[in-house]
Image (cartoon, rainbow, N blue to C red; front, side, top):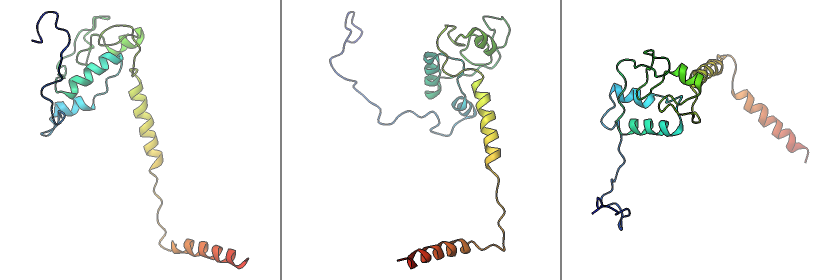
Length: 156
């Protein structure tokens, strides 16, 4: 028996294995699943980030319906589920917003806003379209290139 006291190791492998991995949006994603999948977990240590990603992956993530009270500033400013601190307190104290420990923060709190601003500025710069000139013929460029090749052949 696996629950027997002192029986720490098993002699065989797992009896049943899934043939396909679980998908949380298999039958069409609901609004809550879409929001959970799109959420960026910032201001957390690696362990807490992995825990929340697991909850999202296996449909265990339940978003907050009302703001919770922050343990540092005692204000109702915690908007993210499973967090104990609001983002400003976690940012100023350099603590994980979920467990409250002073671990290395994987994704800093303000980095997502900066990336969105950079992405939007790059997309505006890169999408300038040239107007096609109806009088200009694109075949002229190919003819010039062919003439240059013909001139090179004359030298031999």
